[in-house]
Image (cartoon, rainbow, N blue to C red; front, top):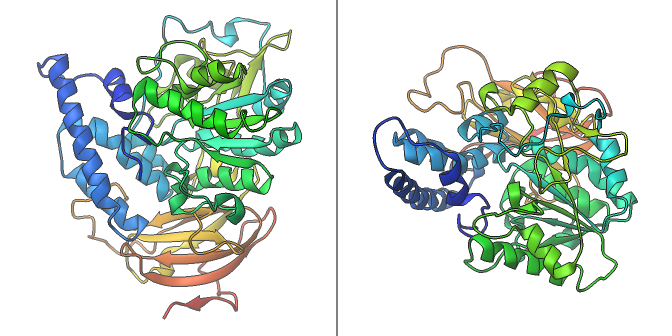
Length: 464
């Protein structure tokens, strides 16, 4: 398990710079000292949570800790931790609420593409492979608690493989999982963010396409510039030093991929790698122009573009010469994600633009043991595989804790899993990891499967 200082990229440095003090009088240093204390407390809570056997049990520890501490400084820091675990159990709306970075207009923002008639909006999925054609490396960034920012990368991997890219590297993959390539799918010991199903799907997709998957996380306790430099050295040694003809796809968080400017008091991983290899990457920025739970946190350009163009897929802007637009220096192209739509309490971007279809599940197999975790694993993968998708069902909001076991006859909770057509093992389990029900299912191509309150197929069997 990575610590905040090692494996989790934001850490205090970003939080201290992007949050504001509460209204009552105190100095900046006092506020920062409270956040540093909250960071240590958050680390300890996460370590305690991970002693629980089940993922759902870990989340329970995290959410009760968050609601049991009313200190604003603690909420600023620990909200980020909680949001990761909310993504791990498929609770994406609450994850986006627990931790949100407001995207304000900055003085060095480039003019809006709407203000220049030379720019036109085009589908990112079509444009980016062409932009990458003459590059040795392409870097994507992500907001770790917003898996929407991973979806485009998953969809692009096939097209980038067709362009000749053959290495894939992702932040916080663990170098200790030496069996990942041969096994073909991630497990709990494969990484930190890969516990989230879209991140796992990204790694799984790369493996299926024949990419050599690289873990490059720093193994030391280095922070700031030293950590960035160590990550860059790890990539260089495993990729370009070993294979001079390698072409690399990288997925990393936030400004780890920026090509210029100060980052965490030094240089970014991308800048360090450029110094080592001399290779200029194509950098794709995905963490600034996406929908937040509160529209007040959206960048003004995002608000204007989505209001005028009403995109239903990720877009980029290109000028008449074929040059892409980016919001800020240090990145080659910025992606605008479409506004979020919800169905049965889940965002429809989980469909990966139609690669996956909704499969209806109900809590009638939970035996009134709530919260109840429903997981779908590919039929040809082991029980240790990170699920293709999962969801925690509960008759009350997952972010509620006070009197949260009081229920009135509102019926069993239900929602959708998003799955590629194919065969899966569906399991229901409680917060202690006890399996309540297991079922083999087939997801048809392009059609929503029958609701689970319909008669079970012959292969369904209760766990005894």
